[in-house]
Length: 166
Image (cartoon, rainbow, N blue to C red):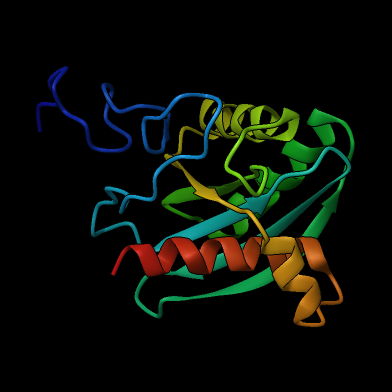
């Protein structure tokens, strides 16, 4: 198959590294259904933090996600080594990251950090990365009694993403 420069499919040479709605940097993206090829069935999601990164796995067919674990790593090398192990184990077709915003939709310093993490994931693992507005995911995880709020938050992020595909 010839992928011309016009080919927008994730993973094609012309596809953007990280897919989200096009909006100014100062505001949360307007929710839109992501363009995800039908053959993408398995996903890993991350709730990025500078000290802890929650992880979850989900399946498009079942429309469900499960929390995995939280990566306890402050340095990028240790974090990406742990992510690499998860990718080898779960073999996802794409990755999903939560991107935090203030309640009013304004970006803050962790917004930029999460987006950078998404670009790094794409660069290291050559998998499409989808962004999800993760406002209140940790609050929801804690309200649900999660023992590992970061992994539960990643699960909530992935469930939100999977719902957007239907």
